[in-house]
Amino acid sequence: MNRILLKTALALFVLLMAAGPMTAQTDSSSAVMAAARIDTLPPVASGYQWISYRGKADITDTGGARTCNYFMVNRIDSILYLNVHAYGVEIMRMVFTPDSVIYVNKLGYNYYRGTYEPLRLLMGIPVSFDMLQAAFNGNTDKLPKRQKLAFEYHNFTAVDSTRSFFTQMIFKDLDHVLEINATLKSIKFDVPGPTSIRIPEKFQAIKWGR
Image (tube, rainbow, N blue to C red):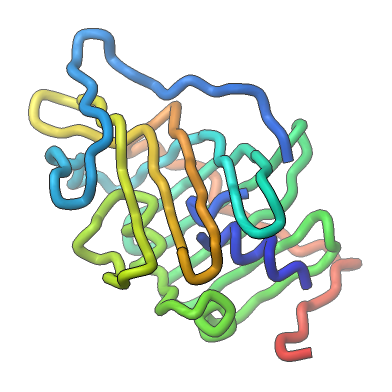
């Protein structure tokens, strides 16, 4: 199994080849607040049942730097869908629920279907549905607090008169020399999106610990 690929996906922001530049969605009539950190975040949009967005992620680790595109759909407290692609080719698809994970690696022709426990061992952090959902939605009070694990949310733009949402998020894991810098666009609230995943018959199940 490609552990670096899976770790990068989980971390994308958990999100993962080369892509053209993408422009974050902004409202020219709204003030954009840059370089906001967890302790100075403006009000983040809340109260929605669905959220989806697209974007580009730049990943830097010990293997170098690379870029990919991603598409995320989250039905709050129910399911989180992640599609990672580059050059119009799907690389991987992941679906998270509160109790299970399905990961399909289109490049490696393999898949994983099971609990979060192997992912917790792989990442070395308490990976859970709530944590991933919080990371993608900027709910910082639900994110783990570790000296060498950082989540940053930048470039907030107004959603309405009282709420904002970020158009850049950065994940840093200093223990593993990993940084993911993701931009967001096409942010949509309360618009149901695709969450399906299919495992091709020819794909092989990933055997953890082997």
